[in-house]
Image (cartoon, rainbow, N blue to C red; front, top):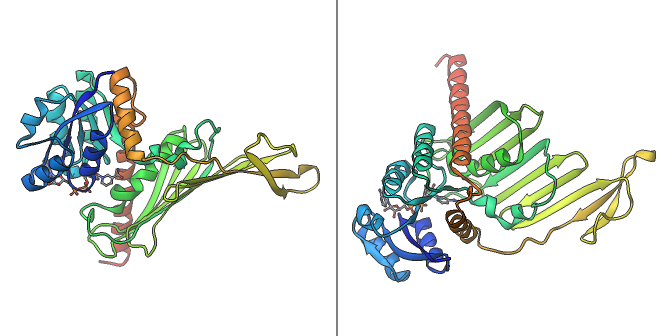
Length: 336
Ligand code: NAD
């Protein structure tokens, strides 16, 4: 496989990491980077031994694939230009600023026969990947994504900033249409919601209860899944996974599980087996880029494609709408 000529557009906080990782991957040849901040562009180019381009158009002339890591409001405009120049796209999450743009970008990339991958990085978190091969049919999901205050990202609601990661994971796990959404959120420090909760109800009866905060004292990124005969806990931050599996047979299903007790009464008693699949430590962003290269080379569907990005974004938009309706109703009730 020959290395794919690659560029990174927007080399701020996360884009610089894209550039550094791409420079070290054999699947890519990092040609150059572009950023509207010329000094930053030069700094990252020097660190990654590639060229600092002075315009987007000049970078696009030399590459076949790009990572787009500019602020979300500029994703669509930059992506549109890149796809017009025939590039495959890795676009950071959220895919675009709104669903209409996401739909338009999907249409453009499909018509051009180009790959569109969206940066929902938690799909590549080893703690989540450790569940590969396990039969997942969650009926209740509880998730907490809490981070400490950071002035970056305050221009959007915590729903688009943090909760969207869990929305994407939940939508990837529950194979049923969304029936209803209830949500509330509060702006504590910023004008947008800094803490939010959403309850997603699905047509198959499954429910997901998601909480996201960017004003917490301690960071946490945990998801708990409950399903018939099993409880699964994913710690995205610590990259640890635990599966508690109930079985009527007292013998462990395989060598990796051990019995930690029993639950139930009489002939309904079941053994509880604990299985802690050892996630293979890895850099999730590096895995995302590797997978992007694989999709380009094999012309296969990316793990997280444009439609996944659109679904997560659209769900986030409905959550935001629910929050705003709730606030309006509360204001009406208070006679404001
Ligand atoms: P940042 O502000 O640190 O960096 C953005 C960079 O883009 C800046 O250097 C800026 O000068 C440059 N830029 C702005 N407009 C540009 C344009 N039109 N063309 C070229 N360069 C331009 O932001 P960040 O934290 O790195 O976030 C960038 C994107 O990555 C956002 O969409 C954000 O949501 C996403 N992100 C994703 C994750 C994740 O977990 N997947 C984490 C952080 C950020």
